[in-house]
Image (cartoon, rainbow, N blue to C red; front, side, top):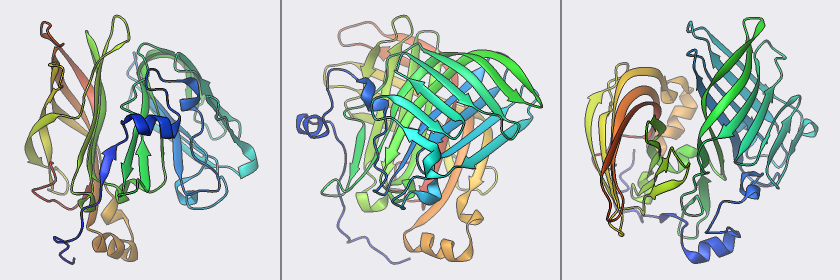
Length: 372
């Protein structure tokens, strides 16, 4: 790979300035229902997903996603409505489905979350959501979400890349919801109840073109719901750190801490069990805001749930393209434990602990400057 150490570093930033809110038509004081409606346009390059997952009281885990375009279709000026579902039963048995429909069989409201893909749909308004995945191939769900926290939006929630904000990626989340309903697998419906998560993401390029790596997850403790999306931009953007981090009070659902972007991170690295690249075993974050509020967040994984080496899975020609841009993509999902020590401005420190499932997507080549 060619040495580009003298190449110009491009800008990467969170769009959180007054002019950004005005340009995007976003109310800085509150999250509005239309923000969970469709944000991409059919004729433009883009990807968008309304994502839901949950962990049920009986140990069942699930996820489901609704998209206007499949990943293969994101560069085409026509929709390719796409849905996928995953269920892991209490006994550990896994069930999946993944379907792409003709453009005419999808509809996506711009007023709120209201999506239809063939016989599958989801709709909601940040306070409640209803989801349906028709078990056309033996896997499905009918679920109701009641939000336990406010929606979480960091700035305008757009991360912009390039000196003229040419590319973007977003994340708008409702981190904690009470979930009830039923899942279909193993030939029958199963009643379930538990806690779940929703987010809505959209972008106009692929993740691997923007990021070197990220850590994404949420932790439910007795006092707070913790949300983190720790993005580190790709080499051409100078490995810019772009954190999204917040605490929501469980008693009120209100956001009580939102990082202003100032933080320190220390990690203890450990070789990944399959391929040997070093991933963080422990991560210690200290977020310190200008108003004096502070949140120390610690997480240590105990069990690796998934590992994917997308580079090895790619064909020879695609690997050559990855090599040319310094990409060596690996992905881990972990079960972890940790906690937070939160000190509001002028207030008393409170500590809360919990467990979480988080992902670590490592897109770029190892580099000491990349904040791993």
